[in-house]
Structure formats: structure tokens, C-alpha cells
Length: 146
Ligand SMILES: [Zn+2]
Image 1 (cartoon, rainbow, N blue to C red):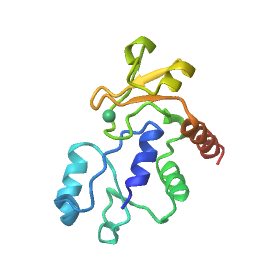
Image 2 (cartoon, rainbow, N blue to C red):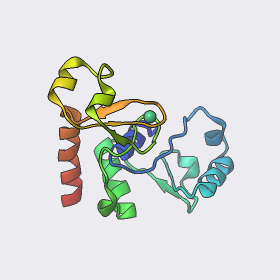
Image 3 (cartoon, protein in one colour):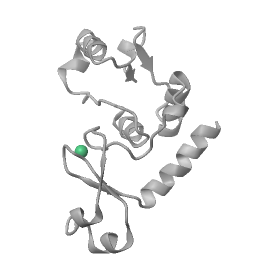
Image 4 (cartoon, rainbow, N blue to C red):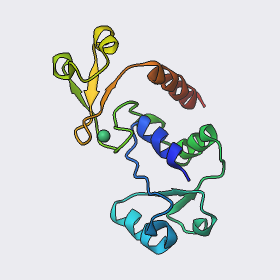
């Protein structure tokens, strides 16, 4: 349900585990809560069945910007923002890589025009500053000003 929010939180640099709504953890709230506790995580959900547990933050809005704002407010996260530090696919912390190392692994135009690259140690996906990052910087700026 909150896949997009999970991705956005990773974009902001937060350690975010996403659990697919179809999995057992979500069918059984006790398993989910136990898992969260063992990993020292807080559950973010739009599942009304979980609403009354104290370890859970119920996300009120279905709109992504409002969801992010609620999370930031609930946890006073502003100071911890580390945008573009995590892999969006697997939540791993990215490591910066030298330009020579990624030759042939990114589109030629990107290789020619960018100088800073980072790589996910788990899935090997390569990241670089682009339009998406610019939009996100704007969003981060707004969140901080709120
Ligand atoms: Zn990855």
C-alpha cells in the first residue's frame, strides 16, 4: 500500500524496509509487529486493523506529499535527511565509485556529462545526479522549510 512512500523515504536516506501487502506478515499483525520490534523499526501503515497498536504510525493521507510530511513531523526527521544515499530498490547504503569503474555500465551520454557516480553494493545499480535528483532536492527543501 505504501510502496511509493517507502521509495521516497529511501530517497531521503532513511533505512526503510518495505513489506509487500500480499505477504504473511501483513495478514498477521502480530508477526509484523514482532518483526518490527526485532529490527528496531516503526511500522508505517494504512491498514486500519493496525491502527490501535502503539508501535504503529497510521498514515492518514493517500497522497505522497502529505504522507512524507506526516512521517517527517511524527519523527522530527528533518536533521537526519541524507538524500541520495540509499539504493531505492534494496535499501542498501550507496558507495561512491570512480568514473573509470563504471565505464560501459551507464549510457554513453551520462558517462560523458556526469562526474559523480555511486553504486549499490548489493544489486550493483549505478546512480548519478539527474533530473530526478533535482526534483527531489526541491521537495527536500520544501519539507525542511515546513
Ligand atoms: Zn540495490
